[in-house]
Image (tube, rainbow, N blue to C red; front, side):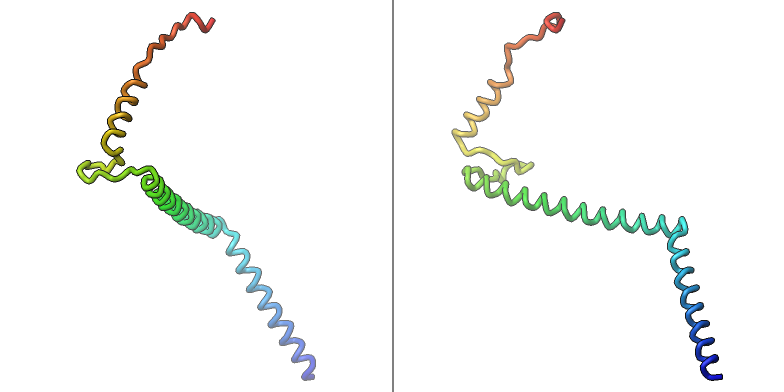
Amino acid sequence: MFRRAFWFTAGAAAGVWATTKVNRQLKKLTPESLAAQAADKAVEAGHRLKDFALDVKAGMTQREDELNDALGLHQDPERPDNVTALPGPRRLRAIEYHQNTHRSNFSYNRNEDH
């Protein structure tokens, strides 16, 4: 008699456990739940992408500072935009070169394409 009662109780408990597991899985597969999971994953991916972008920006800034130090460039505090400026004569040569390179004697003739 006790054996039958034990197995009956064990079977009922297993049935309740299995029903509960199946219902949980079915709730996870509803459209609302799937949309919420997708939104959570998208937000998580956005945070990881933002962290990556910040790491890249920090690395770029560090490398730019290293290159500026190696080339002897410095920040000019008088400039409002803090653009890196070349020191003295080198800056003048760079400005002259920049002005000369934008003047081109090239003319384009559309008839040459045919």
